[in-house]
Image (tube, rainbow, N blue to C red; front, top):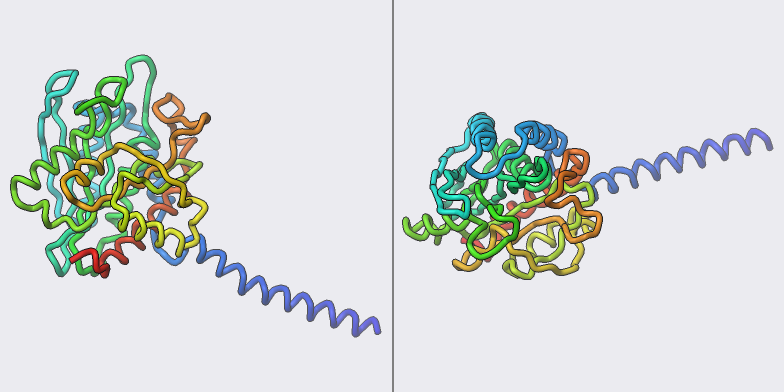
Length: 310
């Protein structure tokens, strides 16, 4: 009987190990491991960007960051354009520049992923904007690496937008979204706006307490597409069906008739570090970048074949 009992325990252990071998991979897949987005590498980029310090529009540190971003993009083989413009702001005329990285597809119609890379200007404390400005730029850079050499039907544009932040303390009137408004105006004037089939905006997506709600100022079918992708990957807890309404760089595109969605982590909680000196690397996470990166990649693949895009 002792031998039988000993043998039974080994059988039970083997069965338990077999169960783990089945359950563990499925859990891993549910966390988005099937995609190749490298959140650790994006997080390293985020830390590098923060090392430039405060980076408000028109500043020398932002120009330094821009040159570094473009150097990184060149390594991906993307077609890079720097679109310089000088809008009038409450602080006077400020030089700004959007960066467009193009990945041509079989068709000329465009799927755009964008985010701002400037930080809010504050005079009473040092604001490095790790999440608000740093995370979106870092995600776009890693996305460019992931898209290198991939085949896709539609053309992809990754757009680093300047001047999202208001120059004054409060977000009022036209003192905000300088880069996105300039881009919509330019694309409208040169006849290219009609090429944009969908625009995905990422903003503050490195938050270690990631929570992205359904933005009612975004295009509904596009919200459904992205959230369906997120839930399919097992990220429902990060992408709940709760609703919010946000003014951001997607608004000028929506107003111009371009389908657009804002993926922005909730910043309304009492412990939020939004627009404070505590928006630092310590409050960001490579896991959050991985989650959003996987969702964006999956959404691009879905949109590439969607009846909503041409």
